Length: 350
Ligand SMILES: *Cc1c(COP(=O)(O)O)cnc(C)c1O
Image 1 (cartoon, rainbow, N blue to C red):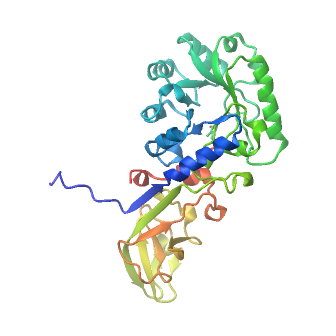
Image 2: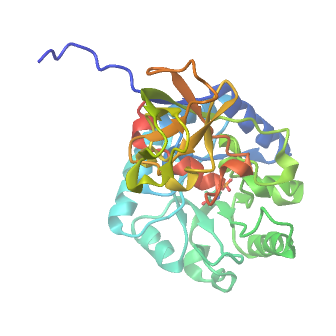
Image 3: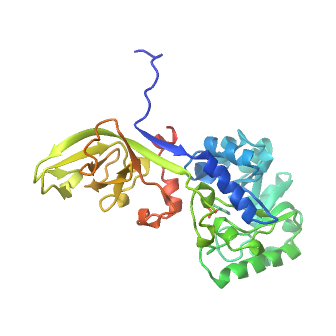
């Protein structure tokens, strides 16, 4: 054992373009007009890493950070004051309320029960979600007159758009219903728009916007094209190269069979890293723009590629794994949200 021998560098890496991330936040903040943009940093900043992304967003000027779970608060609070963190799932138990108080993060209250629980624990500053049609979380408009709601100290009164990535009358209707709720519920600030909602225009921005996907390079509506830069880059090394003879089969179940002699490379990324089987045959990895078609099933830790277009490559060479989430052609059955959030731990630690 040589415990002081450093761990060798990993054979796959995720690079987050922090300049692009900051530029995306600034673009979305500008597109939010008079409103200020917050940032959805749930799910480890959509797979790109809270420790990488939150300081960049904070330094760009972001003041409000949204997570889903209480388990996500401490990681974000290492970089920003906890009272700037909103927890979207709200409080489900006394333990949630006690934790909220001790760490100082702010629950988004989603129901009359949550409101009662929060008040019983001592109340204090909170946010409130009203449902305007997505039927997921939030009090209904009919509940807005309930005395327990009247007793809350609400900072951000918010709702969430169901189909902001589509052009539908539903968007305007939801904005109208939030305005109605705002007439009867005391609050400091209003919030409705996610990334796609920002693209709908200033009538949807209110006081605070909540972009997530577009910060990280997603383009959910055409209006955002030209404003959003790619943030995530994934690369992996060739582990081994081999020569196939006609008739040789590649990978589990031999779903690819060579019909000519060919040189192939086994690359260090697999479905455990988020390179799912749906991104297998029919797709390619890249080396300096040269496509390296994927052969056979994607394995847990590796994938085999055809090196015909890059005969100069060998073990140790780095291969580009396409991860441009704005490019629909790469997404197959995955949404851009899923392409980010499936990024595996071995990539994030890199
Ligand atoms: C995740 C989330 C967002 C961010 O949505 P994007 O489409 O990623 O911009 C905003 N608001 C709420 C309530 C969310 O859950």
